[in-house]
Length: 247
Image (cartoon, rainbow, N blue to C red; front, side):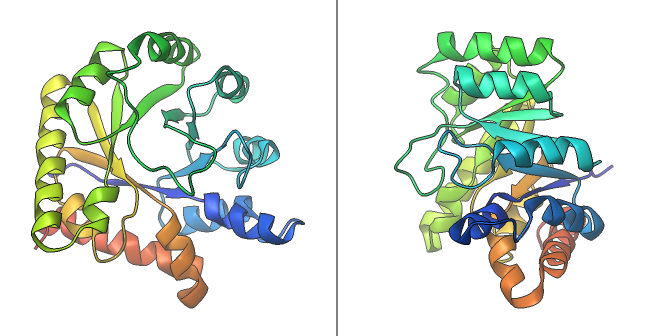
């Protein structure tokens, strides 16, 4: 039987637009409500250390007002651990973070920092928060994720989405191999970053990937067709690819 494929809608860049002008419009929590109507299975929000888009108040409201599971993207810092433990979202995805980057530029180096990550993962797990680690499609990082106790990995799909021709084929092959390796290790496998209507189908067709997290493209497409329709379009493409095996 084909496994279902979940869609997590990232609402960060609704907040980016709001913050460019100040005030309260557009409201990312309203966007989360729209995402629920459009077929999202969860909401993803990255509370950055510099608060460049999602704010602490946004997280409070999402926890209070949204029935869909919240996936809190966070850096592996004491401040962010305290936020996660205070709100106890359904899930926390630990991501690398640099102040000067425009967006997350790569996967977390789990293999290089196991002693730092292991207690954070443990504290979150004790609080009932499901932990995922955002990593490159690299067996070494997947092995390290298993070793530090994370039950879930999210594969960084940015290099695949940015590449063209044979380079894209090579990057996609890395994702396929990493998803299979995660399955062999007993890790639940998610994927995300940079996915669009043009790139989502092959990834959605990988049977061992059970969740895609997509945001920036959906918010950008919403300028032209509306947020609900942009999400519905992604949902249709994902479901078709999963059903038909990427054909």
